[in-house]
Length: 236
Length: 317
Image 1 (tube, chains in turn orange, brown):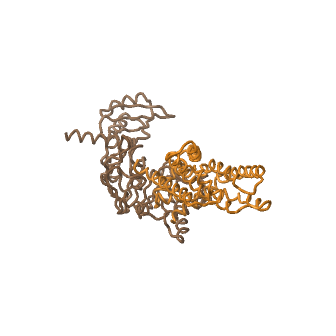
Image 2: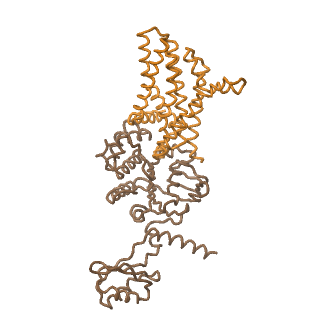
Image 3: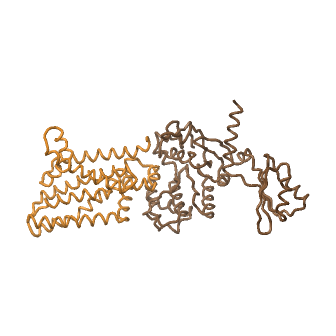
């Protein structure tokens, strides 16, 4: 666990040494602020539901930008060789990087609490759905980050990692919608696999263990595959 | 300290390392010598647990590189070929990160970092960002990282490549100093370098060990070059014809320099032709300004060793 924290600290520092953290956070805040204002004006309602649905789309675009460098950069610069010949396990490395990217994600969405403050000043919002939405956002973030991390471990090109990451997350988002085209186990599986359905119940104020398990187990699976992929240099 | 037995690493269609066996004793400095693509880096990557072998076993400090890899990695300091560093960190910060990663107890970290900064002479740049350092300084930061946890075994992949002559001298001195208390395995393709710092040389070509001995023995075994370089004052054409007249000389080429001529004389056999040349020059009364044997090059070493092997094989058959 000490190695996880060593790697975590380095990754966090590296985010703030490079422009990535600042660019991603500012782009996100500009976009989400715009949608918050738009939704508020249109619905005249003291809730975050509409804004968070739009914000979710930006998370989908920006999370892969956070995760793109995690492995791609190490492979390209060769630092993977010094890292992996240090006395650390592959899991330490993967988990440290995962936590670092997730932390940046949380830092990115934290300032949106200012919208909640605005809502309480000018209206009387229901805090239940707002709290559960943020739980949902963090869980969804862990899934998005692990998708991006896995893809970054397959390539040494950061741009490729980001683009494939975004495409994968969009696919994950829309396969849920396909379930409305039919019935039966196939469409049911699509509905379950898609992220949107699980997200929606959080915005309604429901923290359903099924949804929590969906996000956590999916994240765990992806992290497991990432560890295996990092190991795979050994048997390829 | 390092025991390698029948080690093979096979890529899709070539054997990068082909059934090699060798030992490195404690506190011994062994040089791995070979042309590009000979399998030096692959061997080192296997020993540092970066990639496993296809077949064979290797133990480092008593631990198997495949089953006990974490223990092995704690015992070794590895400097990869291009010295990869995190280019956004400061030197101090980078070494602190590496010290933590290598499980150095908290209160010893600062002391060890200071020691390594002094040993590799990078104290002046300790607060610089590694990305802004010159190649030579990056190399030293890499070396400092390699030494930070005081490993028993150092594995250095081309530690002097890309450095200027002064830096090469300094790094060689550092390595020679370390060789007294550490087991060192280093790779290079510079012949004088291994002669200077290694107790033993291992020549590797196409994944196979072609020779392994002390530098002195190896040099003795190798036939020295019979080619001679001369600088003689006088009429070039005339001198050339008299030099060509010597029985043991195969060919003579020359070019004019400012006030003398430089001759390149190739001997016909393997015997030393310098005495014959000397006698000839004395007889003709030329003014000799310089005579030296052409130093043996790595290419010639390879040529000699590989051809000697084929001769032996064909002789046995």
